[in-house]
Length: 126
Image (cartoon, rainbow, N blue to C red; front, side, top):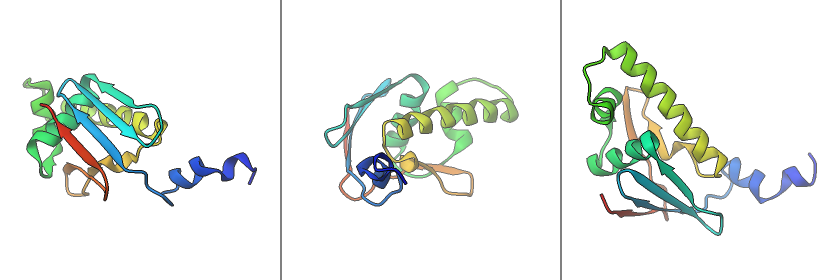
């Protein structure tokens, strides 16, 4: 392992030390602050996914959440495709900003939830 790969970023990415996240949720935008790192600003569908999870405040089925976000009568198969793409994009943004990608977590039974770790804070301005 190179010296660069053994630094704090590598430790944090592996989950060795979790830096608390402060979230400011405003429905169409979500700002995530992690330590001294630059904040991550989510907008569009990613922000709406996080915001809906904040408002619902409990695990919810992916389909119910997706229907709140897209509000149309698409067949479940097409809606699932949109959902999967949106979730992959959201998790990539979280990972790229060194924020836990499990902040938006699937429970393995078709439900999704906002998973706050110890020290994480939430400012709900929805």
